[in-house]
Length: 427
Image 1: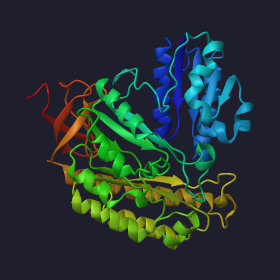
Image 2: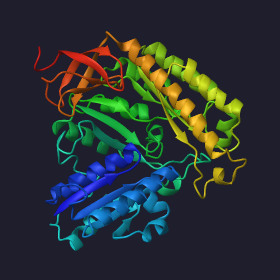
Image 3: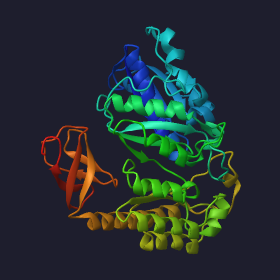
Image 4: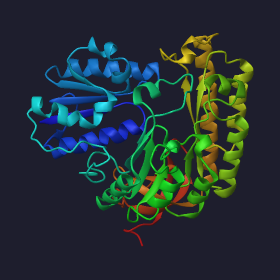
């Protein structure tokens, strides 16, 4: 049996798709392109209208190019609005998020797959059945939590993922050890609300406690945090990243807006002042750290003065990157009923201005790193390095994929240029 997986959305979705790939390979499946696969799994996202539209377009394209394929759709869109997808062609099955980890087991019989695949990503999951590079992934995504208890007014994800649920510490540590033994040298911790890790366990734990435990496991693998809410990035976490040597100096802290008025309307449990204090603290402890954020533009009621504060944030805060999202109504959320709506052309204009400012701050960070030597991991064919502080650097051939290197940063661009100064192949 041949298969393909098409993934939309967050790193949790990516981690879950990676687990599904391991299950399919363990059942004898062979990965091919979606146009040639017997089975195509589409793992959808529902965070924006654009993400949902992208999933619909992909399903229609797969059905057109590969009419004999069995198409199984899962993820947040399939969970939140299954009726939207039922009318699309060639969908064999819709699998909600709660059943995603049993997806392969569910479809195995009707597809004639051999028995015995272990459900992916569960608390007793067997860990990676594949090593780095086999499926195009060099950094291992370690899912430690899913679901969210927050009530942000614009977000539909709590309805699709449910309340926050943490994996037991022993299961996370065990998977980290197995991933390291499989050859992964960097593990990225992911969760829908990563900072909530452990609050629902008995006895309760914290994300900082998990990080301390992982620091003693995973062989010599290093760790990287994915997105963590600003209010959850505690002094203990900053201190651990600054002192342990096992964690990458990289923080992604989604603020969502720089106007306190908009943050209150969004029901965000943080303020601009607290975010700035956190960013300044990280920069003081880790002068070369990557510090990114997310911003939503065009939220209902956003005035020019609110938008100007976002521009100001990207001008003078110690940030290195920003992802800009255009607000879109999510049916069923509180924000969907809020007025006044911001005109679509105004949203596009503001988003373009913010993205331009984001490119400037990213270039500013790159320029600050020129001449520095940073730790990194080789990706792709070995000519691309991901540094510990989250810069991508193009280097000359000569080092294999998935090798730790020291790289000198030489030039700026969409991808920086550099040279390897120390590696296993170049002592």
